[in-house]
Amino acid sequence: MKKITKAVIAAAGFGTRFLPQTKAMPKEMLPLVDKPIIQYVVEELVEAGIKDIIIVTGYSKRSIEDHFDAPNQDLIANLRSGGQSKLPLLEEVRAISNLANFVYIRQKGAYGNGTPLLNVAHLLADEPFIYTWSDDFILSSPNRFQQLIEAYNSYPGQILAAVRAKSDEDYDRYGFAGGRQLTDNILKVSELREKPGKTAAPSDLATVSGFLLTPEIFKYLKTAQKNRASGSELYYNDALKLMIKDAQPVYACEIKNGKYYDAGNKLEYLKTIVEFALMHDDLKDDFGKYLHSLVKQL
Image 1: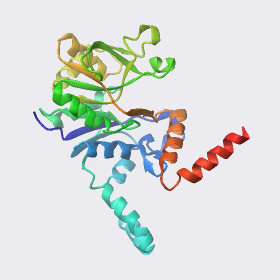
Image 2: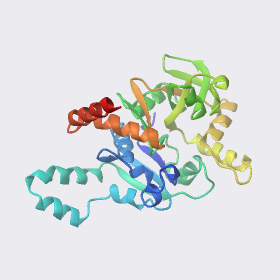
Image 3: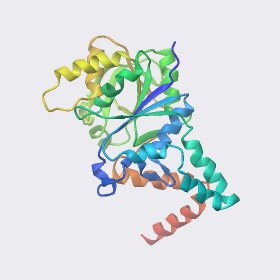
Image 4: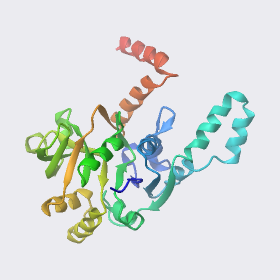
């Protein structure tokens, strides 16, 4: 079985929920304490053995490229002039550009999360790959991508990362998978429904945050593109539904020992910052005391 070494990150959205902050700064670069969201995603991919990362970007996304590029000479000189205490920071920013081989593609075509895949088809040829977003993740051990790859090794096909719904609102926010349970965390998918509401959901298993896809997806995406109504968006789920209809194997992998973080809206982003600050070695004690003092004032 071919080793999975490539990944695609969709990062072309406008981030309108965070305007005016995202007018000039991509939402993917919003910080979780001292690191942008997209870097957490990249570090997970690298930990899972990914070597080549294709980031599909759009208007005003140049800062993503700059972040994963080598530090400029002015920054290097500034950190060197700070003495020994700044040298660890210099090594840290240098290491970012060496995390992986980065390729950047500008998104072209219809709106929708299926379009980034069509934009990169020529770079992936006949290889399975990871497809993921730039503003959400599942914090788990092993990480979500390692678990997807492990699932693929046992169940070759399309592997969708999944988590259990936690609230009634989740059924109106995410897509849900139904089918036959193969193991405690692997579902053979026979049905996918987008934002179905609790009463119409085929299960409580939400497909979120990342996917392991095979090259077969591109043929079905092209069919979905031809079938879509003029002016409508192109979704990867449209291709997956066609694959299921053709009896192509699609599985949902419930990520073990994980917690899902959706930093794509203001409230969830703020919650994520608080939790990450409480996990930060340099901040957690003082920040925890500060939060405690705020709660006492309520």
